[in-house]
Image (cartoon, rainbow, N blue to C red; front, side, top):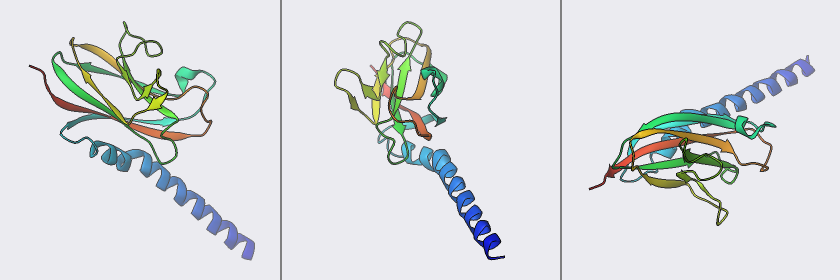
Length: 156
């Protein structure tokens, strides 16, 4: 009887932690990320669960967005504590591939530094892609991440 009680308590504790982690990866993290963009208007979020896979393209997700010429946007990335240096958000199109010369990224390849956000002034109305992925060769844990697209303003 005592063993059954211990197993039951252990199972409840494990299930409760999983539920809390999922909640952190969903709306709470979206709200936290969206509220960090001062003087910008929230437009859309990109929510993903991350798991290390052998194929780098499978370590996250990508979304399609249409951005308008003459508009300045802000792209922000938020992750749970401890994963900031393992995840990257990238903005690219078919002419500027994700892995070579994207329009913007939260990881600066030349200085090897991470940023929480970057601004993008759209010079051409077109379809763009947003990806959130684990960095190649960094960590092998499961995580989640949220990207937020915000409107900053129109250029003159």
